[in-house]
Image 1 (spheres, rainbow, N blue to C red):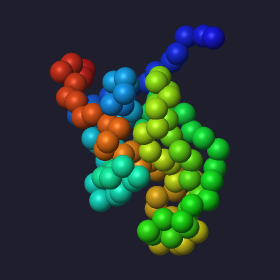
Image 2 (image 1 turned 180 degrees about the horizontal axis):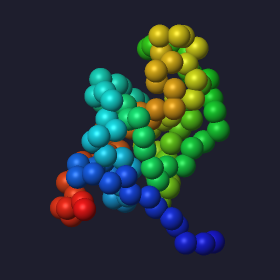
Image 3 (image 1 turned 135 degrees about the vertical axis):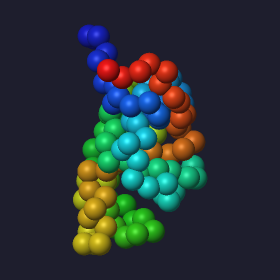
Amino acid sequence: MGKLFLEHPGGRRLFACAGCGTVLTNRSYLISTAFYGMSGNAYLFSRAVNLERTSCRTTDMRTGRHIVRDVHCRKCKKYVGWMYEFAMSADQQYKEGMYVLECEYLNQMVNKVKEI
């Protein structure tokens, strides 16, 4: 198997997988807190790291039909949310390539190390 390579997004206010603590994104990539997932509240991020993506699937959501991929933590393999691949409606296309991470599966933390 090889060594698992994990990225770090930098920043001080971080969001990590609640299952294993692997850092997934930081506060500077947070676009919106007004999203909902299967477990409740969720956040929309412009960038996330250390995720594995499933194959595409089409789903009907509150905002219309979308093509999405579920995303799982690269380290512990637990489900954490989804990624928008394509939005059928023009007014929803801003979401394409972005990640929705469900709050139930995230921990917020502060990085105590000062950046140079």
